[in-house]
Image (cartoon, rainbow, N blue to C red; front, side, top):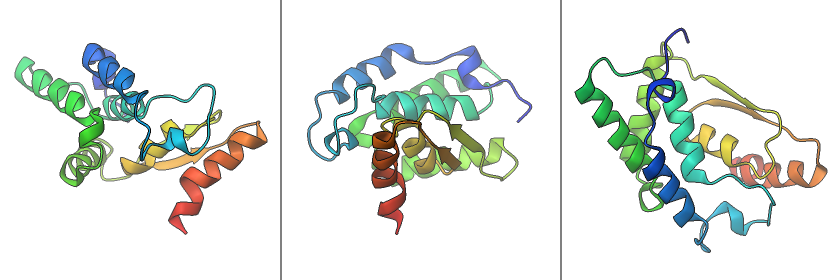
Length: 147
């Protein structure tokens, strides 16, 4: 990856922050219901920041505005299972990385929000933690459901 990423030049922080705050009140179907974790990152912020970090900066203002709107939509909880939206994000990430899934490594993954969203966005994902409880949470969130 030898380009300047979108997150380096712009990011819809207000919209993503609002979605992240809303997400704290979700009690059904969210990984936070699996186990209480003291520093769990919001899925909305994780998904949006991973996408913005792995895609290039826009070439013009119109494209920048469209990309910012796309990231805002990508961060919404009610659209988090929208297959078309996730697939489009995956395709754009692959295109930006010459057709190869980028590697995302989270050495202190804790509750697993970043690796979970990186997996959903089609990345080759690695996660670990020193805390054995966190390792169990990671296995239950990321590994066991795939088996």
